[in-house]
Amino acid sequence: MNFPGQGIISEEKVDSFNIPIYFSSPQEIEATVERNGYFNLERLECLPLEKSQDTIPQKARSVSYHIRAGLEFLLKEHFGHEILDELFDSFNKKLEKSEVFQLGLTYSLLAFLKRKET
Amino acid sequence: MGCSVGPNTFVAVQNIVEAVLNKYQSQGHDHSRLPEFQVFLNVHALNDFNTLFKSLPPNRNYYVAGMPGSFHGRLFPNDSLHIVHTSYALQWLSQVPKEVEDVSSPAWNKGRIYYSSAGDQTVKAYADQFAEDLDCFLHARAQEVVRGGLIILMVPGRLDTSPHTRVVSNISYDILGSCLMDMAKMVWNLEPP
Image (tube, rainbow over all chains, first blue to last red; front, side, top):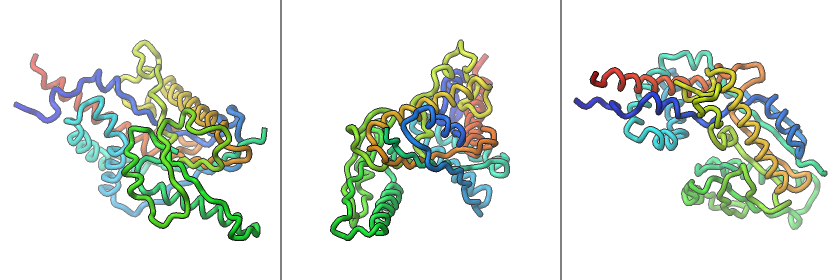
């Protein structure tokens, strides 16, 4: 019998996959700019994302599309393209059932840096 | 920098061009003395620049060129840029931190694909990699940007007071990791004895 996804990924494959993304905070940006020393931090703002009126399934779909667009290349390279549809199907279902949209916060950090004269 | 291939890039370009022109006009410069604009669009060489160029606005008041390469290193000659803009690109690390993939390291990230609900060592490895990458970015730009020039930098992030586990994307990446683990376990259970 042929189960979708069967025999395609192992736990070792999951262990060796890591997403190369990091969400920093204003303090971390400020500290790095200061240590670097070439720029003055003229302004640093933490902007909340506007609250969306979408329903949970709409939000789940949008997060799922968004993440697939960003990570598809890496996932395909590591696990093979065969698992992607099934993976994002189950991801979408789990997102809908999760509390991510009640608990989660999203901010954009906006920084203006000016090259020092010296 | 790190503009990918979508047309939203040109909204940012237009905003910057207009802001600079407004500044010149508000300072009383007449039309004949307004600056011209040369815009370089930078993204990794593997991206399809043709897709990006196809959505160039037809009636633009600036000149455009592509600049392939990693913004963690040098891309331009010394003192050749006045304004650098980068939005939602620097959250991408130049690599997964080495310790996170090292089985013998305390930062090894077993059973997960992301740092947000991992141990302190893993989180620290990610934070250090981000700081190192941002430093490389700033170091390269420091040579390229003229004295008094600007960098406008936007990244998705979090409040100083909010833990990694409260960021929407972070929670989502953890859920994606649990889906992958589900698939791995399903395979395990179905394997013949």
